[in-house]
Amino acid sequence: MSILKEGDLAPSIGVSTDNEKSHRKFISKYKLPFRLISDVEKIIGKVITKEHGQQIFTELSH
Image 1 (cartoon, rainbow, N blue to C red):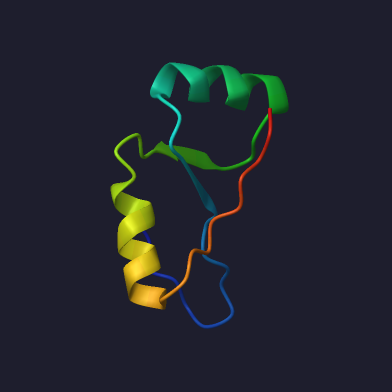
Image 2: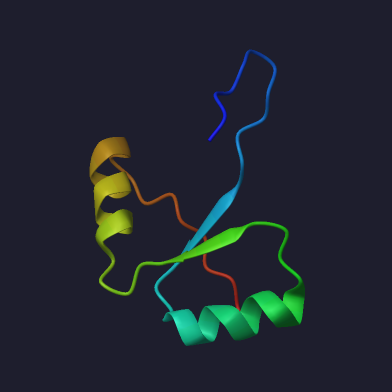
């Protein structure tokens, strides 16, 4: 793992409440250039919402 330096861009990571099987199909179909994390139990969403005081996720239809 490398350490980011000033001016570097952080990698993008997608978070979805869909399961891993659904993710593989979605990534393959849309050729996503980033990783997609499965958050079926909505833990990541709850933590981010609590930290920022608002929901910051956007839903994508597929």
